[in-house]
Amino acid sequence: MDIKGVIKEKGFTLDRVASELKERGIMPRASKSSLSQSINGNPNLSTLQAIAEVIGCKVVDFFKDEYNHFSAIVKYNGELKEVTSIEELEKIVQEIKENKE
Image (cartoon, rainbow, N blue to C red; front, side, top):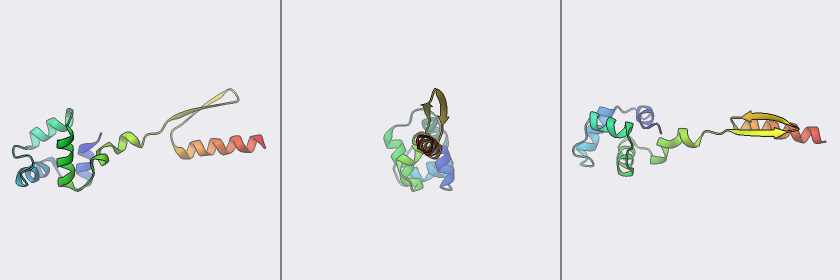
């Protein structure tokens, strides 16, 4: 989860997010410190939703680094190959198809 990274990508700082949360009455006691502690700990869904609302993104954007990771091990003819992208996997599948013909 990369909340701080998404905040930065959207052109915000923790100070600005905390200020906006207070101004909008979403989190009246928000501060840079409390927000940082929450983000570094285990933020609850309502905190994630509030931050997303302020910076203009979706909660799922905070998890993009988690669901974009791909890893697979392919065993073919006794040989193991590790792939870290769909493109690599497709290349290996194509090579297998070409070798079968």
